[in-house]
Length: 81
Image (cartoon, rainbow, N blue to C red):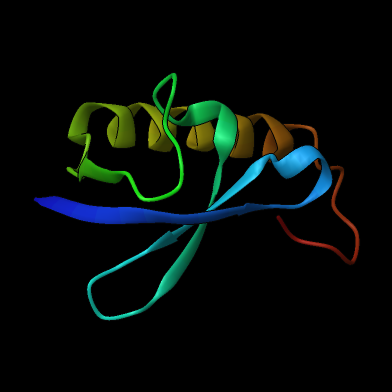
């Protein structure tokens, strides 16, 4: 999915937050450092958004490994992980 957002203005300390505006007037705060070099107010940006299935699976495996490690060190008691 590709969406287009316009840079409305820059705010915050040293103007490091770009306020992006959607077609339906929703605003999104976005780090200026992640914008293309030379981007300025009035520019329209195209964002492509997609699920990263492999990264999702990797994070789930890593999270499970941490949970298993914590559970293996659980000595019992009142708290259950």
